[in-house]
Image 1 (cartoon, rainbow, N blue to C red):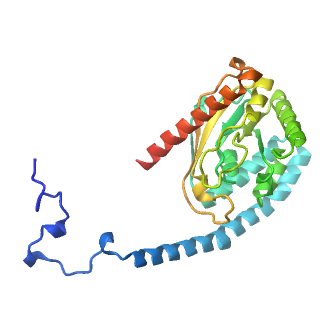
Image 2: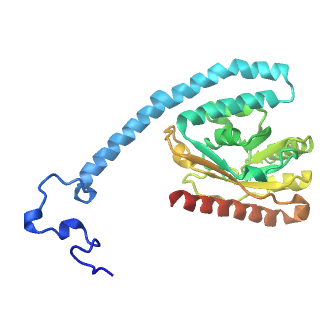
Length: 289
């Protein structure tokens, strides 16, 4: 074993040089950079990133939306099942993500698209919506908080695709949305739900609410947990600053709804959230290694 000292390779080379070997060229070592220089460069990069979001990303997304609107309207007239309109939303999502960030998906082999299922995922950002449409290769509807429907452009496409709007502050509207969600599954259409009910301001995972799992048990539709990664970094809550960052969707093993009753909704919610958290943490560790 080589000794821990000069010339061993375990100490910085500048500590092991002899006076005659000193290199007088300007140092590029980040340790020698002043905090002021680093802060200035970060500020410049942040301003350029904001400029790109406001001058390129959002205008292009708007133009793509305007270009596809006539196709969406025509699809809604010619095909009443909603599948053609869903295909247009998928096209829009693919274009948005091609501009904003690379997206990958794993675990699709666990999906049986021939059966209607309730897909549950953590909710980080409005960018979750195009990620789901881009990555899931079958028709579905989304049930989301009414605030998501107010996000420019994204909310417009949610309405075009026939998604369900839920208002947690109104018991009557929430019950009506849950009844409509049960009917959606019973008609053979899969449903995607964010059981947290809202996006967390700092990207943390909030407790899963029971309402989504009431829908699954009532319709006897299996639950498929999914983990979303990267969308909070791409578009945080309350910000218009779109950043280029890798996005990922991980699909987990189905949970049989037949094993639970309406009295077990709390346990079912905890099981689904544990599955989502485990996939999120495992994928995050793999991505950082």
